[in-house]
Length: 350
Image 1 (cartoon, rainbow, N blue to C red):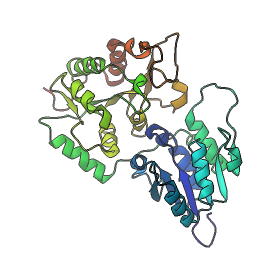
Image 2 (tube, rainbow, N blue to C red; image 1 turned 60 degrees about the horizontal axis):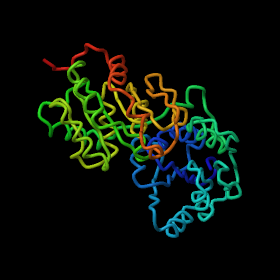
Image 3 (cartoon, rainbow, N blue to C red; image 1 turned 180 degrees about the vertical axis):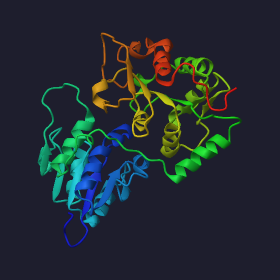
């Protein structure tokens, strides 16, 4: 590692989910500060690479596609890394670090994989929900990183010049908008349908924001939520969607960075709000708030108290989805209004 005659290499097995990747950025920054002269090589799913673009947290990114594990192991062996830091908890990741012949392997001893690691971070024995960000920080500490009090929850994201170009093209392709001061709506999520807020609720919320707050609305989406985004945008000609754009996390980051506020389900893009200083209202249904807590002073969490939840299930096991359907538009709007101000017209609004 740093201090050696030759530049050392550190393999970072990054989380598999967008939100988790953002929550790992304080740990990555602490590692960079500790081993500043080493080369950081991230390994993860292809779409996660864009999370780190522009942050300077990694030097190179190696895609781990669903197939070709043997080829990946061979490539990682050729890197001759000094240490592997494992943020995902799976035994598959630990086995890959062993196959890559990395002498020092740091991660959580979960799921019986402790024997594959050299530096083990024990998981809490009880099932009390705890912030994942704390676990990532403990892994970094086991690898030698140190944190200042203000650094443990300082998540990072960046907008590159390419991302700004994507945003400019998005705005230019629309007639008269979206204007500065818009509110972002972000629905869906890779976790599963249980996190979804009804499309009609998002549509009604968008209409109230345009009429009562006099703000434009931009609806972001992933490839699977394009039709939903288009439906929400039918609420008003002041509601714009990104469903026709080439899917890219960089565009989502750029949109969030320019927003006055964000309303989102508990999905990955919600975590872009904090590093950009954007107030965010998150709609929680089946998931515990504590798991993804980042202690954002500009965040508001909205969750219905139901006797069956939070259940942590991808699809409602009882079929009624009450945790999301009973979350009213009025309740969410009140949080948005408190965040943005009820009488705050957009720049250039009549």
